[in-house]
Length: 114
Length: 111
View 1 (cartoon, rainbow over the protein chains, first blue to last red):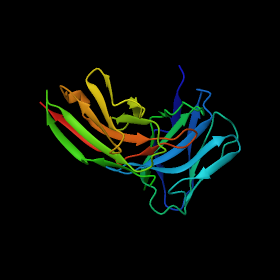
View 2: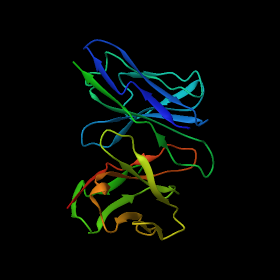
View 3: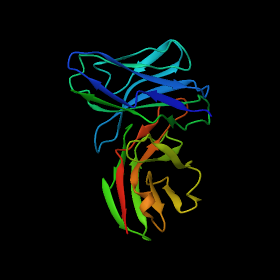
């Protein structure tokens, strides 16, 4: 079955640590996105990539970094510079095309700072 | 101009009632308007979507109404059920560009 796999489902980070969240898709989608969701809040765009080896900052990129070395993979690193990283992180992907708009989301990673 | 506004922030509806969520946008370049449904601890999933050349689209108990001149669109959930309790996001998009999401509406359907 095609889909997006995010891992781990739960992640605990000590203050000052960098952690990497995994996002893998086997949908052959071109574009991939990372969103942050805080309790009772909407989706805020962190980074996105429309093609391999290229990515753009979203609305809240500070304290985060990404790479897109393969079409299938778009890992997100939460660095120690992100002062309040506790949140629910969602990865999404979609094809690029004139009449193609819909995102497919993963099941999310819940990150907690301990 | 890239914003999508959404109201209400939260909504409580009796089982069997009609749930209505409203959204508005400014950018007339948007040409696709999806709604996503998110259950707690899960990622959002596409529920229903509409293009601006259509004033209404219905899929089962879910209906989108679209008013192009007012730049507004809404989701109606008929015969609301407890299983519909979730967060709903309206959104808007332009070809080859990222989707712009509204802030979400938390719907609770009580027995």
